[in-house]
Amino acid sequence: MPIVLKSRDEIAIMREAGRINAEVLQVLVDCLRPGLVEKELDEIVRKEFKKRSVTPAFLGYQGYPATVCVSINEEIVHGIPGDREIGDGDIVSIDLGCVRKGFVADSAVTVAVGNVSPEGRRLIEVTRESLRRGIEAARAGVRLGNIGAAIQAYAEGEGFSVVREYVGHGVGRQMHEDPQVPNYGNSDSGPVLKEGMVIAIEPMVNVGGWRTKRDSDNWTVRTLDGSLSAHFEHTIAIRDGEAEVLTLP
Ligand code: MF3
Ligand code: CO
Image (cartoon, rainbow, N blue to C red; front, side, top):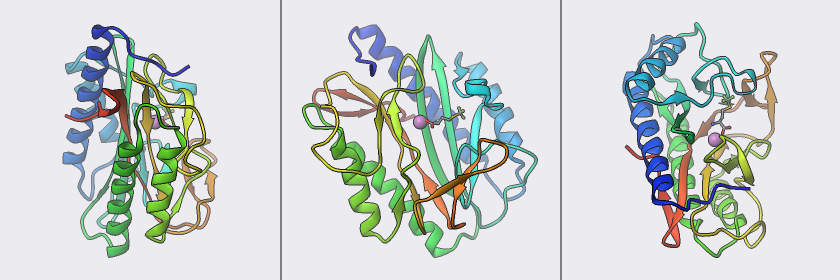
């Protein structure tokens, strides 16, 4: 069951979790530059989370070994921050989750570092806009499929493809709760969205085809055809009939 926020306290804590996650994600974005070693991002998260009295949602999740996912260029999601340096012209996806008093917030952005190709920049903008449209489609009383349909129509209309094998999700007391929130599919399908529901919407958009493969590290997911991929994610709550974005600083 997805979390449905009832008490004022629960809403307040989810808002805190979302704000803190967004603040720390912004700290990471501000650090990005060619030559930064991926692992440094993990170290920053540990320090910034401690300062803000939250714990990492990802560390130890199904054995995941870091606090943050760093996925570069044709990597889609779940890249483990390692000894690799970020290069000039890379597009870098950063995905972060925190736990505040038992409540989870989850969000992601893709950033152009240095001299990125026009296609890479357009991919980032289209993916950001597809998330905005997905959020706009999330309203009390409509079916969940409206979200994915809005994302898919826009991203495909721009000539890109939408990843199928990884999806958004309910979030709150657990990082991954029901329902799944696909970034594709038919409007008027799926469960009806209700006041107080909390979900993470997270389109992953590829320049080439939608198919993926996983590395031998069992985490890193990349495009099968080697094309660029971008990822944006927000945690939202349905409040007063509309989506309230919780993961804003
Ligand atoms: N934010 C990611 C998602 O919702 C979770 C990362 S999985 C982890 O898919 F193992 F890295 F935590
Ligand atoms: Co997520």
